Amino acid sequence: MLDAIKNLGSYVIENGGLSEEGILVQDAKLKNTKMFCIVFEQKDDDVIYDSVHLEDYDTSKSGKYLYRTFQHGRYDVTPTTRILSPDKVKQRTFLWFEKYSKEYSNDLLIQSLSREIHDKGDEIFSEISEKYNSLDKTEKRNSILTIKMKKEGNEKYLGDDDIFKDIFKKEALKKFFFKHNVESRGIGNCCLCRKKGEVLGFAFPFSFLHS
Image 1 (spheres, rainbow, N blue to C red):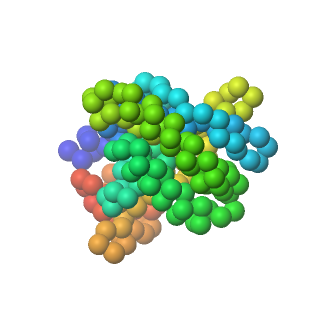
Image 2: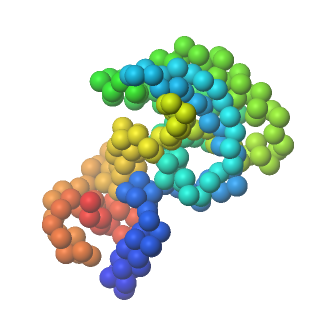
């Protein structure tokens, strides 16, 4: 039975063209959402706040939004986060960059985004608030904030950047090996693929995962 589940999962991943990040994205929570995009202009190693615009959720871009929640609820795995209110999403965004700008102090993109969001925070979230308040109740309940960057007219999402993909995979995989302050992972043979590699002890719904 477990072999059949593994084969089904492999089929879905292969035929759905899912990336390593795509299989960890909580795309079901993104359906029928309004995406609030904070757009930054990239200039050399720096970014400058450009604007906020709305776009409808695009299923084909779910792997680019990199949306996944944390159990603690203070912020989400990446700056792509649900808007509960303009004030709360501002707080969640500031908390995210406060944590990861310290953890990734040598990454120029994280540092530049963090600095610009804090420097232009009032302007950015005032624009978000204005657009948010113009929506009806249903649209407000189904709104998500994300970040886009553009350079020479070309736009890209968080999932187009290696640093955000790395953060997403690292944090999303923690739930499969870290629980109740106990870490359960190591090198072993996966009982599904029979290959030797890293196995994660808290994988759900089955307690093994080859990585």
